Image (cartoon, rainbow, N blue to C red; front, side, top):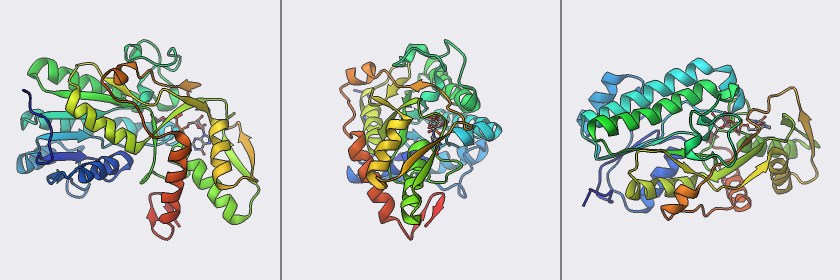
Length: 321
Ligand code: GFB
């Protein structure tokens, strides 16, 4: 019987402070895990192989959730491609190699749904990977994330490492980034409608045409899926993680408006990029492992906004209240 992660296991969450990492730590704590290992950027620069190897040698994790990364929305991706490809390729390479060198029992690497071709048939199946050109606005990031998948597969193939890859759709939830230049659309809209209501402004700017379609998974659902996959999945292929349900940016903006600032008008700034016309994942393989998403978008929006309000006066990433 292969080793299975348990509350006594030494579990390293690489990227513990971010949107995904903090959700995984919350979930592990809730499940009574007593050996959750984390390291701040000051303690370990994950882009530095020597520092990462030194940390692994000293801490000997048995399980690794590799969810660290330099991430951002469409504007950050299209204006900072060098950071996005360098940081992410280095972080993936150093952690996966150290996990092999120090005999980690199992590693789960988290990619992104932007790895798929811009014109991929929707919903996107895992087999669509590398079958067409990528979306230009986040190609650098996508290449780094694809390299992460190939790293895990290569270490599995050559050394027999139990390293798996999960590809989540667009995520949201507590500890998200609310900085308007680097954030993803959902937290950006939440902040924009919030600020407009407080300022008594009757119009909110939405980037693009509002016609692109996106799928949104709450990060607590993702954390649940990651633990589920760490326990039940060891195939070489990456696996999609999502709800399988999408909506247009305009429909999302109307949901956020109705929740936060119902009287506001939407103004579409078509000088801003739309990015990929549609991104929704085929989650047949995931559902086949016995997992389905549990947090619907309306409930997730309400609970995330409540978290946002509860943080007022505290430091939310990208937004000093
Ligand atoms: O979430 P987002 O920045 O990234 O943009 P992607 C999604 C859509 O929302 C685009 C529109 O069509 C944006 O033009 N949008 C409207 C806005 N208003 C806003 C706004 O105020 N801020 C932002 N950010 N968007 C990401 C990749 O692509 O997908 C990431 O850039 C990652 O690397 C993520 O892969 C999963 O969904 O287009």
